[in-house]
Image (cartoon, rainbow, N blue to C red; front, side, top):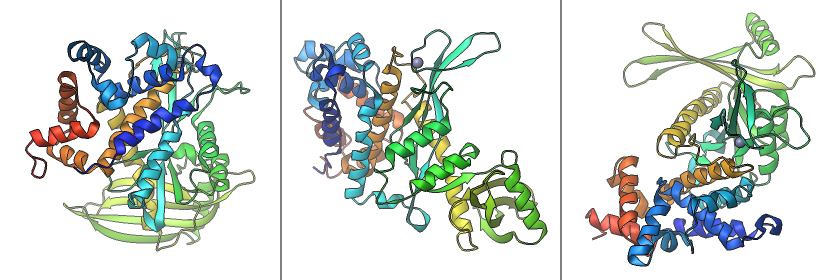
Length: 436
Ligand SMILES: [Zn+2]
């Protein structure tokens, strides 16, 4: 049996998070009760089954044993109310060390290096996304906006940085940063401020590899670029003319004087030739007042035969652009858009229901549950990258839906001794050579 122990390691690391719990957060509850509540909630996200706990209570009654205990190590199955009350007290930051554990595992198994892009950079795509919203329910960590009908919309949103690579369908989520009211700040929090906090919180963990931050036009903002540079992070950020008037005035002036360089290539997309035109210039001002000098590049894709424009985007980068690196820089910049679509699609539509309200709470519940959901997504990605049994199984059960349907059904009717035991049972039942 070839197992990488990924599942067991992550579950025991999840347990460890609660050993660090400060006493005042425990109150009358023991560390074990809180841990059981968190792991039980995690198990629902991991199995993508809101009724997982109910089914395990029934199994316990019928068979005197259950999967929540055997696989996830939960001693006493908590009720939904217990879960909500206990987890509302816990800051999601308690779970952030798990993301580093995952990266370390990938590093040790030599898999993280496969995520390196051009010039050994690891690309981090940054994107803010809304999780839950309501006009009726709110908590002290809600953001809000005024609606035209004089009502207030309460919502939660989060910055979701993920490691991406062009051509790699899997993405690696890094710790999130919640966009929420901050102590000592009257103004509402925003994606840019959350990004600065994320950089400060994670700067140490990001040492050892070279990282490039990707982001949309909102990120090509001077204070944010300076934050990246202070933390020794490179950047490739979308930069639109409307929001960067000074920069484009300079680019236009230099272009008129023949100082903007151009590179062209023909690209066969499998059906027809595309013409890719790249333009670039170094050391242009990001804004008018005491500007940071950045380097600018643009990519225009047209159909070679009809001349029809198919794609146009422009970026600012901190590293010097040359005719050698302009093509890979543009390619890396474009990776962001793809990853944003894929990550959001997986999290929101492929079973994780990231926008669904699993419980709002008064303080941390909504954000704590969203982080557990993200960790469930991370664990499936880790298994997909590191666990041979899981890889074989996912290849056999082609769709994500089939895999989760089978997983849920088996865990409802049978009790397994371990995650490996469950994987092996499925492989054997599918009569896969080497597992019979
Ligand atoms: Zn709220």
